[in-house]
Image (tube, rainbow, N blue to C red; front, side, top):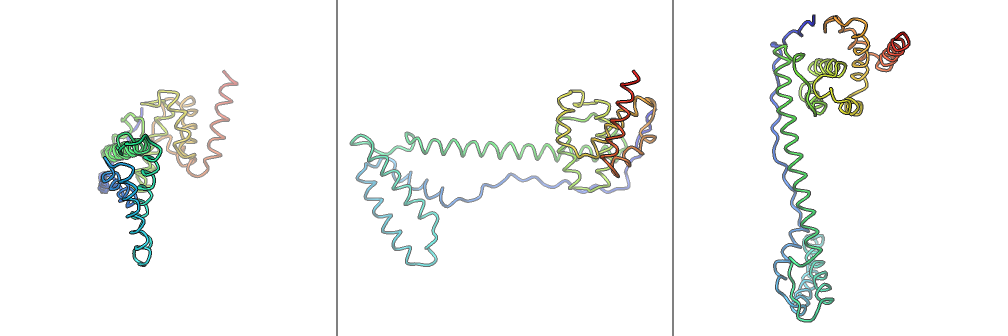
Length: 256
């Protein structure tokens, strides 16, 4: 019969860190290019050439002032006028500039949209990890963590809890994950998830799980408290613990 872990009611849980939406850093060069594109919209090649000459004059004047010598936005604006001028010079006579028809601009906008989507996905994942970490920490304090099924992504939640609360929480979470991995519980019922865990969890936890797997064959009715020594062995010497698990597995296979 499995003995439930004692509750950790005496330990005050630290508050979960607030997960803010990542702010996109200001990019003077991008701002400069956008300003030029808005101004150039509808311009002919001659009008762009005149604007380019004005930008060159401004650049020469700015170069005389130390505080403007490294003007990233100014350089970007000048470069964009030059690029648009070359684009219209190669186009049919009478063509006016249209950002919507500018392949370079459309590719840049698509890349920015993809980057924004990636940041949003990263934020959603951070929120999910923080919420799951709160849940596991509360279950640990209630002494019911061992009754909880692990979910996909709990490996990242383990890392979050380690950073947030330290070793005294991680030891319990590691034991819970090791027992779940050994028993193929929760999402570890999927062989692919168990295989993926090898690259997501530390060596001592994997060694602990491997030893628990073999001990389950030797003593199927042993409780969590009776197998606590396995965690200590794995923490002290993961390599030796993994070797012991492999030896027991080979012995069992040879005797079957």
